[in-house]
Image (cartoon, rainbow, N blue to C red):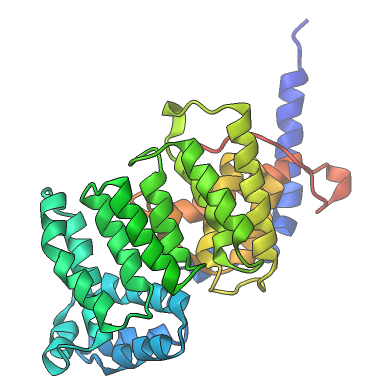
Length: 345
């Protein structure tokens, strides 16, 4: 007699998917409504003006963040403006001509030079040449920690010694104890891909999170350490202790995500990273909840690190998660939730 149990289980899974998927789509924007790295209401006018060759709105935006010591926003807006300038930098040239010593213009100039140097086959040599630009940006406003985040990235690319890196790290901390960008730069230096190990990476991230404020993005630092390990894929040998640390990092990031309203663009990148890690760990129900909280705000990181089509990869992961939850939800529970574990490929 042929065993029909596998066939029956397949039929049941199909029935569950058909029955439960529509209800589980609640709170998830349609694919066409999801945008990749959509600018917020402060950044958008600056990008529109830059597209027209005008630098004044970008200058005003960065000056406002500097005057108000909005260092996290300053770093975020800087990266987005520089990403635009990499293909269209005429507006930056006009800005530097009009105000060659403007601290904000010097910072954009330095970040752009660092980004371009990182893409060069002669990375270390190119980065050494842009060192004076970073120094000029740092000296233009001694309060600003963002040039020191640049200096930390620069040190990693130029193979700086631990002693040199520690000195730069101390300078960054003197300006902002909990600056997320500087912590990420330090974490990358300590990662197994560069000059440290997964253990060192987790140790640093967990201590930093313990010392940070409850709603600080530094609370997501252990999640970055988890991603660094997971990104190695099948080549990484994970232990039960490492897996526990990955799950603990995800739990901490879930609590951080809950501190912000659903659809808030500010924690969008952290939520995208959290969804990625939860999917990788097969925590499907929790991943689906984060996709709901993300709303229309897909982020290039981390999806661009695993695909040349980050938006497509985000949408695929979201759909896969929804189907996984639907297939594990009993028919009699309708839109109730089950819990399955597995690995996303």
